[in-house]
Length: 256
Image (tube, rainbow, N blue to C red; front, side, top):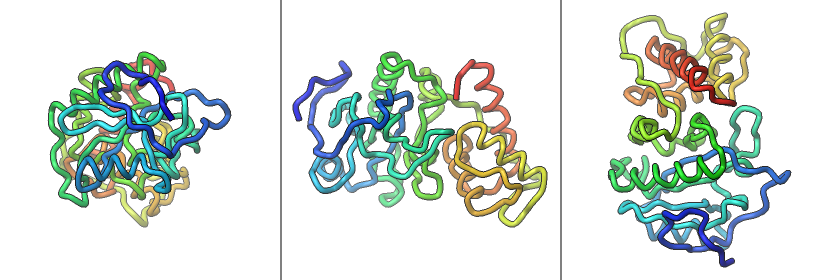
């Protein structure tokens, strides 16, 4: 498959054998960021492009900032797997997937080089303009697949992206002592937490029971928005940060 890159910041095209049509003729209105989680860039590129691996992404961003396009934006790349955000249960059909070369948690979660992040920002900004993607729909793989995925990880500089207009972010509330919600608890406070998380887009049922799914969603939220402590326990800092985020979304006029 030969194609012309969608973005002017692409340095190379390496077509992937793994792609399909977007279901229901859905136009992409979401960006999902990943880390490759492999030993090096070359291993990741082979896995994301070779036939038979059944995984791919639209873009790969190398550590030095070079950007490779593997699948045209008009087609469905296989990057998110089983994933949900809001009413979208086929995230691959509504999103553009960007793989960022980084060893991930299996390789010590190394820091992301500034040159690489600058490239991610430039790429995302272009996609957002072309596709009219709102800030809150720039997400991490862990957001749309909590409990199953951890990328791009708690060291990913979401605030730096948001400062450039990519993604929605608020300063995390300070971690202080106070009452917490955790597995096994029930009641109105748990229900309110679940409703707030679901209202932002996370896949959690508002049951009033703090179950393992709720813990995983809280951990995913923390990994993105309160990364100083990722434990799946809804402490005062987590609850305040969530409230601030929902307030910021409303002030930003973003849509779900």
